[in-house]
Length: 182
Length: 411
Image 1 (cartoon, rainbow over the protein chains, first blue to last red):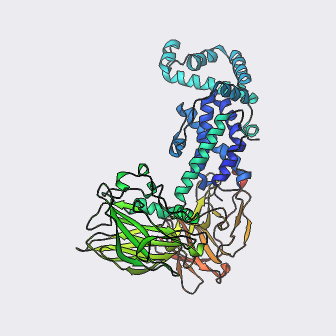
Image 2 (cartoon, each protein chain N blue to C red):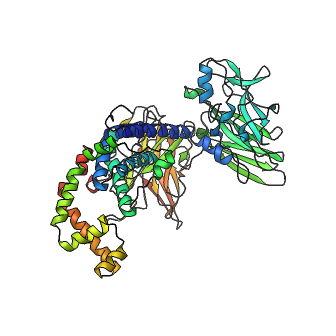
Image 3 (tube, helix red, strand yellow):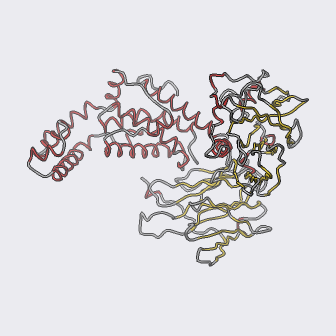
């Protein structure tokens, strides 16, 4: 049975807050988290005819499936896709300071940041340095390659390996998708 | 949205914006294919096109606004000029009620057509009713009210050999049996003949001064309207109105829609049948699923899957674990034969078992199909005859390749 707009409203009410926290933990950015949440529900509305199942039972998993796809796109493109929101004509204002703080609180970002810093410090120097160059200093791969006297391709591979390593280290401390959904 | 986001007002505001947008979008979809046909088919390129939905304050895309107004017992208001584009604003003094009339099925004031010129020179049309020499509309309270000159249904570029304006206008009613559709058009001065297909049968349309008008029961999609226009010089054109690609016309009842979907993480397709005009109370058949995509695992896919189900009012049940429940609700008794056949492998499907063979309607391109039989034909007696693209045929009885999606592969 396709989802009805009333189902989507109900799912939004029940899961928007959890999704914001879910996205915030993974993007470390409250603005991105709110945009991704809105885009997830706008996409759910546009694709509601594809939904099969019971809204209350299967809806949350379906919503989080859409959320994962948007997160992957965000990781790939480095920006939030807003096409579904745009098609619906949905816009939003900027976040207020208390809203920033509340989202950080919900996502336990302070804890996550501490954990990242701690795990970063525990990583091998070579990996920590290349992550510092790429993620913190936002250097291009050509700059990293030049500084480390390696090829650009090797620089990309090393950054990728270091990110995977960091992800594996902090994953046990990240609230799961199930926890966000609950 | 309720006040559940007191600590994050941005989420409440976004929820409200989504609610508003969803309501707006579904309202646009509600008159379904009829309004689509207006917007897309009345004004074929290269002529100027105007979406009738822009008529916010008037009768607009359906009679809903007029019905509500009439029920309140107040006069039908004139739209504010600021809400109308010049293309949709009739020039005062140009209105003229044409001589063409159409009977209302079941009786009542006959339908009539008023034309006018927009401020930019387009030909505009308003569908209404004629009573005692006045042009207006009879509300659900039975009272006749004039339709102000400013209210129009649509405008288009006047031409000789193409329709300037054509559409299917719904006169809605809470009682489905009282719903009426008026087919109307300004076909152009060179229009010689017009005909319309209603539930599969062609009938001529009376053309007066290039205009035609026909009153029908039910919604446009129920009739599966196709208008054929023949012009002097031998050119002709066909115009489907109110038919979506997934719509299947029922021989006597409301139109149906074939709907396909997949289960997350599973390489298959599930097909069901529901009312073309869908809402929470409309009937929905059981899902039939088959292995058509993939392979996500080593098992081969099937070229077709389908089954027959006899469905009666009140029937309901559970689908496979991941697919929820279905309910036929107050749908008319039918034996539905539906499923999927790969268009590359299967050319045509006929269903045998009723008084005569029934050709299945297929959704162009995606292979999903539906054949409708009366419920007096038991599903177990139905045989489907498949004609394959290599010319061979096969007759099959009972469920074919219908499987239950397994949840172990879902995420």
